[in-house]
Length: 112
Image (cartoon, rainbow, N blue to C red; front, side, top):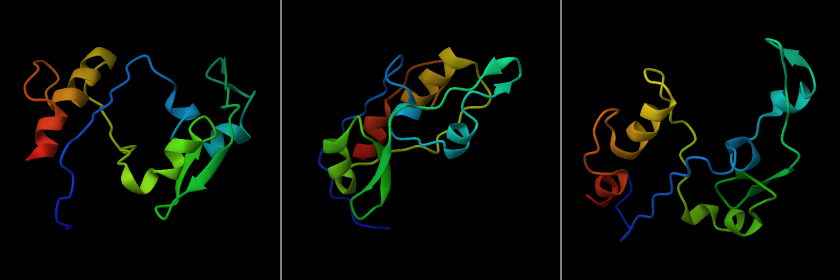
């Protein structure tokens, strides 16, 4: 563990925001399968290119080159999964660690 340095946390949960596939979550398999049919639907890859940034070597879309340059200063959680609840409850769970109610937000937990 590293000693905490952060004095403040800005938590952005962008429901309805830009797709994760177009921002911080490259999908090489989706790119390779672009246009193919899967379960009756056609797969569509992002049209944006990804580059690796900073010492952390994080891949960031060309939509955010300035953010990419700061990736060593940021935290991007791309491993969060919600498997028990449908989409509306998953959003609440991401914000508060509870799928039903809204106790303290993630920023409160990070500030401890």
